Image (cartoon, helix red, strand yellow):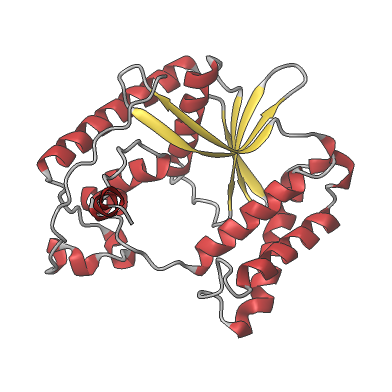
Length: 283
């Protein structure tokens, strides 16, 4: 091996500059230190059953909409969900180290049941999405880089756009819809920045409940969302450059995977690796 190759291998990799996603925005609002641990330190977190079930169901629905329209029956959706669940729990699958052998049948049944919930809300044989699992990357006028995957984008024959997100958890209680809808406003803003068109509808489909939440965005809403994200990103960059991501305690701390590293609970954070920088995006 040449010395140049050896030196290249020995050279530490530079961390990739960051962009803001809906989930990382929620992390920072919840606790700046959690944002740092996830986005910058990239501390490992154990996978949960709920996470792997969500991934399994999302993949099954993506496979469903890849079929010809007339074949997207509830029976076929159930078959796809069960097949994806089997793949997930197989050796090397995403759920192999999370789902116990005695839980395999229930995991498969839960995946099929969640996919069945889609048919309570809509009929996939009656329309075809414009796209599924789209990765969007853009930036606000203020320069805040935004990115994320959108579960589904529908465009009606008359041109109206609908942005859809699937949820495999519980339907939020009345008065607690702001968090999920903030995620949808984030997606709507990205779509608008890229396509210069405001979606007619944002739709959250809660598969377990067989129910949905909808929101009709307007220019004022998206402008306010952009301002909020610009302000949030300014705070993140300031913390990033100074290394001052402070913990913010709440009842959610009881479910945090990083309490051992949190000064608020007597822990010690790892040495700060430094701010990776901001991803430059041509909006």
